[in-house]
Length: 261
Ligand SMILES: Nc1ncnc2c1ncn2[C@@H]1O[C@H](COP(=O)(O)OP(=O)(O)OP(=O)(O)O)[C@@H](O)[C@H]1O
Ligand SMILES: [Mg+2]
Image (cartoon, rainbow, N blue to C red; front, side, top):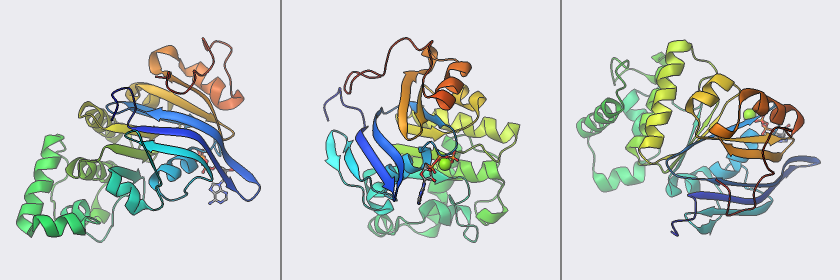
């Protein structure tokens, strides 16, 4: 990969559902080792955009470049094989499986090559959680259904570390969490970025966005209103971008592809 190219580049992405233009001409770079917050009002296209990358709704137009090469992500399995992990608030784990089983779920192929037994899977799961300083999960053999919201997010993040994901996408990871659990999840998101993982976080919570993000991308009615390093924005500018699609205080228009942050 050319050093100048980001891990993921979205070029002119369009997505329609019948007469609804969910995404129009969205171009966005997602670099490794940084947290990109995706903000926008209800219906702005945030979930649709990440579903394009996660292989759930392949785009109607535009290109997706992964490590500099054009890719067609036609299914969640395609996304997983590239190293893209998507963590949804409620769908991240299977309630009836325990923590270890969840962390190895969907990786049967790698599984077979590694010939992992229950004991080594448990050890790998425990080591990964420990490496992230996740200490609140009492038993790795408890069903995921018995975990708190914050613990579920922690296990889902640990799974992406265990499988060396290159891009982790989180849709509203803290929406249902209390203050202490939110702090844990935000810390883990920072830890992922510090390991070189690219992270995309969708959030409506401006406190979370400004605490965790390196850069903020704002969608407005399916178009990219702006993407800037967090230091160039303040809360009221982001709210303006979310509600009006522009902010008079923003220094300059969105730069051309290839020159943006
Ligand atoms: N499967 C679908 N079929 C038809 N229209 C859809 C579908 N998914 C999304 N849309 C439409 O696309 C637009 C963008 O929706 P999206 O879910 O991406 O919004 P969002 O930014 O994630 O909003 P929220 O903050 O409420 O989650 C909306 O107008 C929505 O109604
Ligand atoms: Mg959404």
